Image (cartoon, rainbow over all chains, first blue to last red; front, side, top):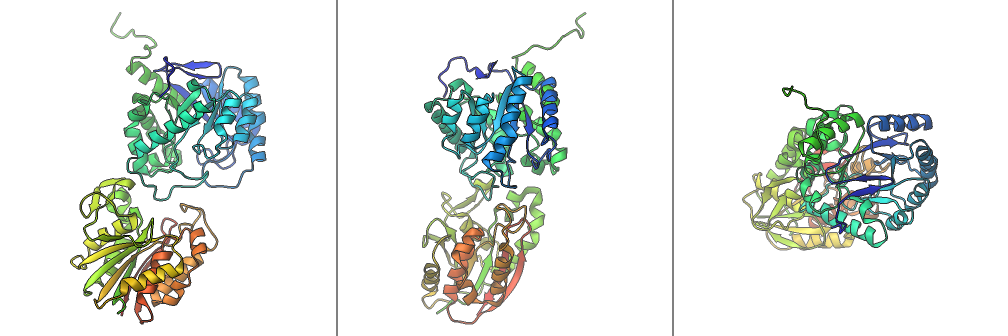
Length: 293
Length: 230
């Protein structure tokens, strides 16, 4: 459990206190990601997506240079080509924006960190043992994930857990403590149950239902449920039609204490989270005139 | 005395309706084929279930516990007590309990997924020994690399490997089963290789009549159902 007293998450120039929800916009520099199918592979389209996300209320952007699932091999050189200059360009355009990069390679983490990235989203759960040291070296925060021991870019086959929530807590908090030991700032570390990765739909639903057990660890929790298969399988809907289900899962996660939300649809998430913040008592309504005049 | 009959079935958790949820009906045909194959074992004196596990030769009584909880359906269990059975034997026990062979005295035994051929054949011979008229229920899956949407991505040799297995199960061709290459099966993520070779060992030189009841890969993993009789 983090020993810092205030439980404030500090990334780049931003601080997010407990009860404050941060929206992380997904911007892929890939030609083949499952949801956007290459919409922001081209540089200009990607910059426009960043500008739009910021205007719509994103606090962080998460840049990915490699499709998460199985696909064409992407070399480290190619991943660097897709991410490093782009991160530097975003930093120039948006000096205060928190930039996260989704990568499982420590070599990429070092270079994007030097180019201005504030957070390394290590979705493949420390598959590269040099990752925490790389994040520490560039002063970046780190997302500690759970994939049930899968190797990068593979799909789950009959993943079995005695208790999936306990497994996620054990893995992510171990990675978080290891990150601290290797010099990553305690207040820059997040844990992520990583829905769908190494999990069947029942297991991702269980994690959503019992998310409070993760938030109770004291580590800030990031959730990435946006348009995922567990929502699609639950509602029998293809990737393009999971927006409402995504908001429901996101809202429950927020209610149970998650703090950072990785999403495709920024305005929808922002609106839902702003309402939940008021419901939880950590924010005030914008204005309350009804029946009060 | 060799075995007198055998059935081969797959063991995807999805076969259990409570695990598949609304998708359960998609596997109605496969479930029915499994039960039909196992029903044909009912006139043996006793039955052995063979399935992959962490080690070779771990034996369980028919009452050993198993659960589909680790896959999302804790309400579906077999046997009694703490769940100790690997998935393959949990599924075998679950299927057997619904079949006409449910009343036979039975035991279960594991074979390691990477057990060398000789070890599989020897285990089969050992299981078949004695004067009882034994039946074998062999749990095993084909390649998990059959399609672009397979759990592990498409392998160009997966389909021909599975077709070879299907033909061997249909013809009760023990020589072909015994000749399956463990390295290739490992690369293709074909978990059934070792159990099928236990079947080949248990059948020995005797002649069986085979009947392939199911052979498809609806989710990119090869499933086979076959029934053999002496």
